[in-house]
Length: 199
Image 1 (tube, rainbow, N blue to C red):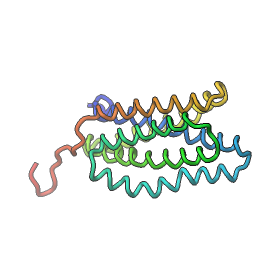
Image 2 (image 1 turned 60 degrees about the vertical axis):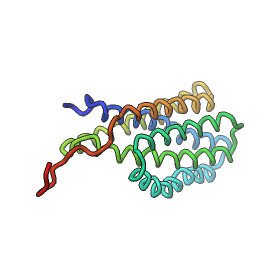
Image 3 (image 1 turned 30 degrees about the vertical axis):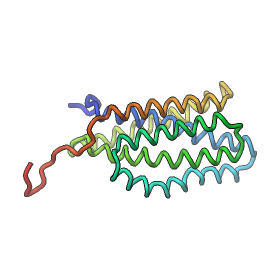
Image 4 (image 1 turned 90 degrees about the horizontal axis):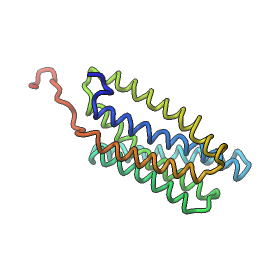
């Protein structure tokens, strides 16, 4: 059966796509907003660090969490946390400090959702389909990046001139992604026969 006809893999692909569209759009938007706010590339560079450094640190904890806790729950919590960060932005007045805080919080929450998604993949597809599943996942990520960076952010910031609308849309995308994660189904590894073992 083709992978995308299998509900668990299809729902995982959906949740990855929607959350990555939102995440890519927000990352790009934060850099643009920081540049517009300060007019200095130095502060934008610090913002990029605020996106990268927490990812490195949180990634270690997120990997352990993905091994210890229900994976679908981690995806849901990570997506809802990012939606909450978007709402936090909407309640504020913007500014440099808010941009940095949002960047750090988004980067941290993203690691938990991404680690859980990565752990789910080999648990819902057979070993002989894993290479194809990874290729599809890469294509999903590429499409999400293109849509987030090339369409959503430019349209919201340049056409509608509203960062608040962008954050509202991204909050909705994270909620949709989290809801889709619940429909992935069981995430225990399919039965495999080890050499010298029993099925």
